Image (cartoon, rainbow, N blue to C red):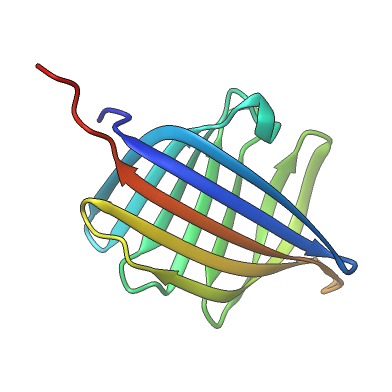
Length: 147
């Protein structure tokens, strides 16, 4: 599968009354398999995870999003409506277990691309609030190069 999609990811973290945002535009892969859409892209120095690949799996019914990072600092977050998951998350400084609960999961994804928006809260295993995170992903098919 070729990296023939433009993936734009905007992440916003709200913590202690402050907001911090980051935006990444990169080429990536996009496909639908069964009842889920898959968005895959290489991380960069800007994200702090260079050398890693991230896959975002969005259920077609918008019930669940699973973000999996492969590479030097692997992690997986399961964001599911109505269920709080405990997820193992690797950082550059070590691993932590986090509680993850979905606020919103919405998308208009189709075989050609589209838009995925979700937000979730993170808490420590002891249920102490850490942050609210909003992720906005746009997937646009790139024009095929001339033959």
